[in-house]
Amino acid sequence: MSVGLRIFLLAAALLAGAVVLTRIRKAKMQIEDSVFWVLSSLLFILLAAFPPLIYRLTEFFGVQSPANLLFLLVIAILFMKVFSLSLKVSLLEEKLSSLAQSEALRERFAEEAKENREEKD
Image (cartoon, rainbow, N blue to C red):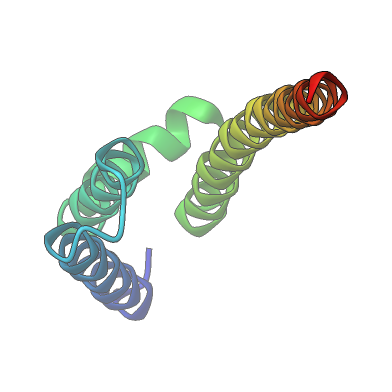
C-alpha cells in the first residue's frame, strides 16, 4: 500500500471519527449508529498505521493488491450499513402505517361520538 494511500486513509478515518464524536456531543446522532462509524474509523486507522496487517490479509484472501482489498473492505462495510438502514426504514414505514391507521380510527370514533351526543341533545 502506497504512502499516499496510507496518509489519505489515516486522514479520512481521523476526520470521520472527529465528525462522529462531534455529532455525539451535540446529541445529533444515536449511539448505535455512532458505534458503527467509530469502529470503522478505528479499523481504518489500524490498517493505515500497521501496513503489514493489510499485506497479510491480502495474501490470505488472495487479492491482487492491498489497495484492492481496502476498497473491497470499504464496499463491504458500506453495503452492511445500507442493509441495516434498509431494515430500519422498513420497520419505521410499518410503524408509521400502523400509527396512521390508529389515528384515523381514533378520529373516526371521535366524530361518531360527537354526532351521537349531538343527536341526543
